[in-house]
Structure formats: structure tokens, C-alpha cells
Length: 344
Image 1: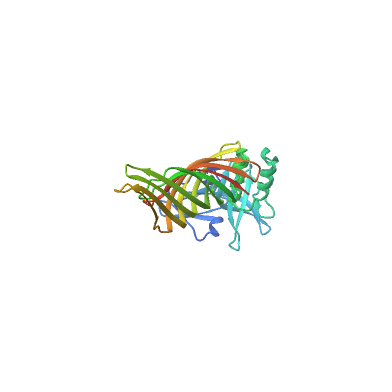
Image 2 (image 1 turned 90 degrees about the vertical axis):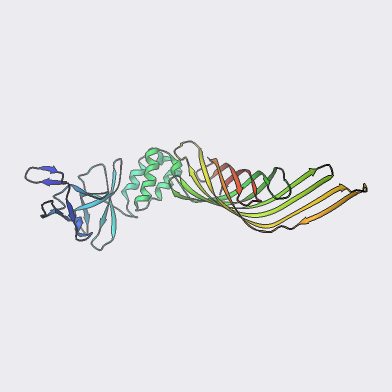
């Protein structure tokens, strides 16, 4: 957009090719090659702004090196009344500048030691919450840091605060073992371990888990010729990587989530024994105990489920989830699990 000094009007310039020498110089002027082939140069005070690809540039005034300059800056954040621009200093270093509301005043610098955006955030009613206020105090001189906190302030929802968390977990599984040649019935078993929750982007997080899982299944089969009793024992260290999406838009203490991910089970110990009893041709009862050879190793599986987080305090939460675990091996463990977790 070009400001004509004679007419006093802004004119939109379209269908032109911009000619830039380097990133520093294009903050102060741009060259425009018109359709007739002529090259025209516009100073930063002559144009209101322009668009290059998907990025918008605007003419703004700021103070640097003790002087006020009119420069063309890319807009890197623009929500509500807050706009942030990126300025390249004479030494080539990048620096953020911002404005709140008025477009006519000087842009203010955004630094680690002096950030006016912090005072802006503290004016929101939700900043009276101790947890939220502490979260705002951790604001850094970056667009991403402000964007996350601005969302908490605008929505009035502290659930958008994300942190790295870790804790303990306990669970109960109701499943079966498909291990030939016996059919093992469903059995309720327990397990426990540790977890971490790593925020990735907004409502998405990654949750690695390490659990110790002891299993014990039994089988009882009868027929006309006799009966067979079998037991199957197994101890695993299980590593699970869950990809979780949390519905943080809820303002209450309950935050539902869905999750899915792979698991790798390291089989530490495994055994299978059977006892057969039958009556032979002479009418004698015969007993036979047998230890079946089994192999240890690893087993790959898949876990998926849903659950909810309950906020106990500003730093602690309880997690409840129901998940289905499915080992991909032909002779694997499968079943439903109920897990309770507490972050420390």
C-alpha cells in the first residue's frame, strides 16, 4: 500500500515484483518493478505496508541506538489489541517490538528484563489466581511464550497451562493369555510404574511410561478321558509411549483425554507347567507333570484408550483412564486395563 503525498490517500499496489537487496535494507526501503518494467523505490515512510508471500509487513516507528526510525517490519503476532513485530538491528541480531492498541505511538522493545507485555497480562482478572500469576511471571521475550500465556488470559481458563510432569501409576488389568495349547481364562491382575508427561503443542502431549507387570494365569480342562490343569507365569518390564490429546477447553477440574501409542514389553521371566490326570486301559489313574519350554525376549503391542484428569491443586493431578492393550504376537496378552496416576 502506497501513501500518495500529493493526494493524501493510500493506494493499493498489486501485481508487482518486489526487489530486495538484503534483509536489513528492506526494513527501510523496497524496490518495486512494475508491469511496464520500470523499477521504483519506496521509502519506509512512504508506504503503509506490503505483503510478501504469507507474511505482512507494516511501517512502524521505533527507537534503536538512541534514535527514532521508521521501518518496515514483519508482523509475527496479532491477536486482539496486541501486535508483535520482528526487527533486525544494525549488528544483525533480531529483536522483538510490540504495541498494544494504538498504531501511532512508538513500538516498545520486548526484552527479558523489561517486557511490558507482562504488565498487560497481569491486568486480566485471571491473574489474581496464584497459579496463573506464577505462570505469567515465567514469561520470556519470545512470541511462543507470550502466545501461550495470552491464551490463558483471554479465555480465562487456567487449564491451558501446560507443564512437564512426572509421577507414579498403578493399574489393574482384566485379560487373557493366548498361549497354545491351553486356553487361559480372563484374570484380574495388577501392575505399577512411573510416567512422564511432556507437552508438545497446546493440547497435545507425549506420555512415556515404564511399568512392572507380573502375570499369572491358570487353565482347567476336562474330557471323557481325564483332566488337565495348567499354569502360565510371566514377568515384564513394559515401555509405553502414548500420544495424548486433552480437551483443555473445559474450564472445570475435569479434563477428558484420548490416547494411543505403541508398547514394547521386555519379558524377564516366563514359565508354563501342566499336570495331566487320566485313567489308563487297566483302570489305573495316571498323573503326569510337564514343564513346557518357553522363550523370553520382547513383545510389541498397541495401547489405546480414554480417560480424564482431575485437578487436585495448582501442581498435582489425578489421572484415570481405561485402555485396551493388544500384543501383536500370535501368542500374546490382551485385555482391558484401568490405570490411576498421580503426578508428583
